[in-house]
Image 1 (tube, rainbow, N blue to C red):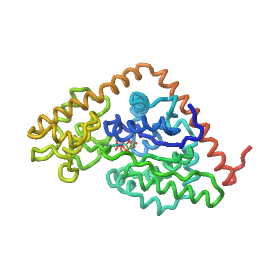
Image 2: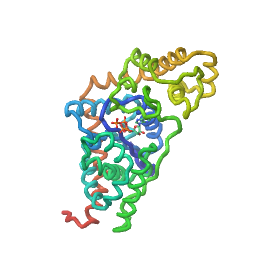
Image 3: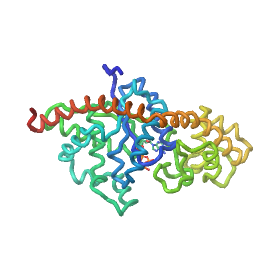
Image 4: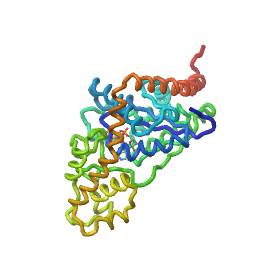
Length: 334
Ligand code: AQP
């Protein structure tokens, strides 16, 4: 794994459920391309996932499955550093220091905190509140130049930049100021049951998601039952035809056919035919990922080795940054 002079990119996914086709389209697919261009750090964000209550045995299982899906989707451990966040203790250690540089009011303005606390009033914990500080630590530890962010993470990246600048200003240059990396348009996959909200792995309605371990039959059935609209025209219009537009996005991602050509292909055909066609191409798209995933899960020792190797690589870089930070704030270092 070479690292010289390449820009650094960092991203992660929480193991809070089985990954969906949204993760493949919106994250993994891009990461595979990015790893050839950038020094890439990809983590399974288990520390973040416990801001919502997790069943311990399930969390362990999901963490290994998430790692296997990263590999199955094409993340290459010889090109990227692939690791479990809790295996690199520097994430929590830097988060503590950065917490002391973060204003209470600043965190209170985070819209994701407000949304999540409204959705889960039974568990508004301090971790949920300081989550953006841990995210800042994830990014700053590796001196990332770029962070792929969706709309919902932009505010957190802005906070990361502010914290880095504040720390650098108080002491001296320590952190690189990261920039957002905006992925290609059209990769936000919406729920099959409510196409106005994002497809989410923790959605209670399993029919809203295509999970990366769903069988062909399940995939085809879920798409058949997806919510669309009452006219019968296959046309890309995210505002007025969000369900059909979402299915068109999936068709496009699975086949490479443009929206214009998809519209032409289905002129005069009903939604039934269209949904069946989408189901088939999506099933074909997922099949090799699922097969690879099953193969990787059969050899847990190999998977463990890959993750241990990744953690060692990540720790080396993370330690360097944390050591600088500890020195600058005045901790005794022997
Ligand atoms: N539906 C989606 N469409 C496109 N991209 C998506 N991502 C997630 N869902 C979609 C991308 O995956 C990365 C982060 O995933 P995460 O699981 O850590 O967090 P999340 O975005 O909160 O995903 P979920 O499924 O909604 O998680 P839960 O249900 O646990 O809260 C990001 O790159 C994101 O863009």
